[in-house]
Length: 84
Image 1 (spheres, helix red, strand yellow):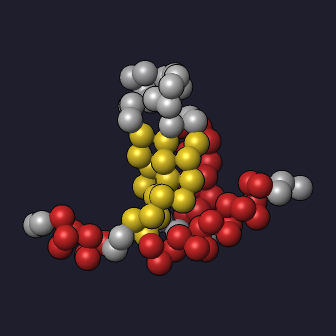
Image 2 (cartoon, rainbow, N blue to C red; image 1 turned 90 degrees about the horizontal axis):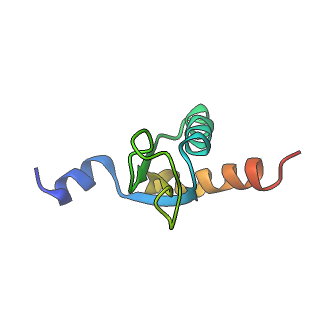
Image 3 (cartoon, one colour; image 1 turned 90 degrees about the vertical axis):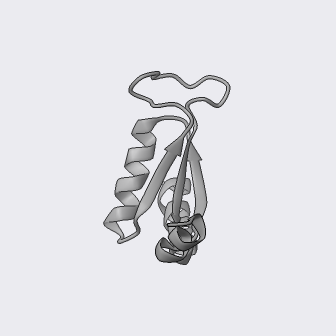
């Protein structure tokens, strides 16, 4: 199956946020999934092998389907940028 066919099948993925460690990434993933938004975590280094963040190596990007991107960004902004 070509990349274009795969993209059409699952929809385009949009990067909505970056974090600097697996714990924070998992919290955000759980938060989004509790609101019905599936997400994918992508990083340069497998955190269990190299558990550090130096020069961007520990950066983890969070992706959601294009159709969910706007809602996911609003949820993150409401929950994590303005904590009560």
